[in-house]
Every structure is written in structure tokens, then in C-alpha cells.
Image (cartoon, rainbow, N blue to C red):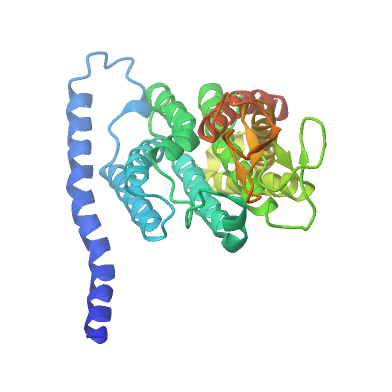
Amino acid sequence: MTLLKNNENQRSHVLMPVLLSACAIPISMLFWFINVIYSTFYSDSENHAQDHSVVSPWRWLIAVMLPLFMAFWGLKRKSVNVSGAILGLFMGFVLTLTSFAHMVCLFSFFVTSSKATKFRSHLKKKLEVEYKEGGQRNWIQVLCNGGMATQLAFLYLLDVGCVERPVDFDKYYRSSWLSVGILGAFACCNGDTWASEIGSVVGSGDPFLITNRKKVPKGTNGGVSWVGLLVSLLGGMTVGLSHYITILMTVDTVVLQLAAPQWPIIIMGGIGGFFGSIVDSILGATLQYSGINEKGIIVEHPGKGVRHISGRQVLDNHSVNLLSSVITALILPEIAKVVWF
């Protein structure tokens, strides 16, 4: 019986990619067919930019298949639940359609943050009252982490089209601003996730509150450590590195030679991760309640037997994550302009 079950599981693992491909191909072809009809009957043909021409069926296919495989991988790894996977499908589709660099930023954040969440999970169970294996992000968490990036991707799609461009504020101002904004949103989320998930279980000392530098228990909102700040920088640089490599692989060599140097993308990712983690910590220390209950576990709501540590009950963790990504996505392009100019 055990052997039969193992064979059935192996068959299901083999058939799943086939089923996903069978669903993805007709869906992508339908999108391509609609795109062809729209381009054929486009009224203002003289002003129709080249970037808004018919998107190839291969791009539609990739934009459908990659998010499907990412959602399947996330469900299998228990990194997202069903609602999170469905919303992630939509976000992944938009980001992949606009630029492969945007999709890789999402993929880099999703994979590395999921790994960070599982890092020393046995210790996190003692610190978090609502700990879930693998993180299991729901649709609210997915929206707060990827909502700002998806919104900027929509603007990129409407204003620039479906095309990969280098970051060059002199030649491609609008696409560069939006791309760096998307990079900033994901770098912020990844840096903050690395800081909270790795920094909280590495080292024996307690963190300090970012507003007054007083020692606080591990898991306190707004509590930071030097290890956490360092890994937030590395988490952002990981997203920046993935964006940089994708640009080198997808943009025409001649275009790259005429554009500004692209290596500062990695630095911008690091700044986004570090800055986003700082913003998140400040908001968490001031506008998010932290208390410790009788069992020594950090809670976000006051109650009987709960001793207040810091913050006020204004925002929850989801709101703090969303605000941090919005602020970072809006500020990082302004910092990048100084670097590239």
C-alpha cells in the first residue's frame, strides 16, 4: 500500500506541470488574440508607440506560466495559503508582463523571505503567539507586501508598455523611476523580513528599541539589532542583484552600452532594504502596540496580565508593512536619481 501511494504521489508531481502548461497555453493565447484585435483597431496609429505594439505570444505564455508555478511552489512549501496564492497569481502576471526584471524581484523576495521565515523556526514558536509553519501568507499579507509594486507595475504597463529597459534617468526617465520604485518596494519587504526573521533568532543579546535604544525583549515591534540591520541590507541587495542580472540578460547589448552603468541597482536594493527596515521599525515602535504576557510571549493587543512595552494600538503589522513599502518605493527613485545623474 505504501509503495502504491508513493507511486501515486510521484505521478501527481509529474502531471502537475503538464496540467499547468495545458491551462497556461490557451489562456496566454487568448490574451495574445485580444491584444492583436486591440492593436488592429487602435484609432491613433500615427502616435501608437512601438512599446505598445502587439506583445508576442511567448511573453503572454511566460506571464501566465511563471506565476502559476510560483503559486504551486508556495502552496507546496506552505509559504502561502490558497487566498494568498490566488492574489499572488494576479500580481505575478502583471509584474511579469511589464518586465522580466520586475518578475525576478518578486521571485527573489518570495523565495528568500520564505527561506528566512523557516530559519530556526523552533525558536520563533517560543516568541510568536500566532506562529505559522512556513509563514503561510494570506491574501492580506500578500497585498501589503506586493500591492505597491503591483500598482507601479500597472503604471509602467500603461505608460511604458511590456518592455525591458535599463535604468537610465537621462534617457528613460519614466521607466527608470517606476522600475526603481518597484525594486524599492520589494527590497523594503525583503530587508524587513530578513531583519525580523533572522535577526530575532541570531545572537544571544536582546534588541534595542529604535526610538530610544532601550533594551526590549525579542519580538518587540520596533526592536532592532546590529545583526538585523546588517541582514536587512543584505536582503535588499539580494533583490537588487537579481534585478541587475536580469537587466544584463534581457536588454540588448547595444542599448546597455549606451545607457548609464547598471551596477548601482545592487546598491539601491541594499539602500531600499536598510531604509525600509528602519521605517518599519520606527512605525512599529510608535504606532504599533507591543506587550508581553504572563507566558513571556510578545502580543500586539493589551489585555489582562499583559505588560506594555512600547507603541500605541494605531496600526497592525500588515499596515506597517504596507506603509513601509509605499514610503520606500516613493523615496528610493529620488535617491537613485542622484546616483545615476
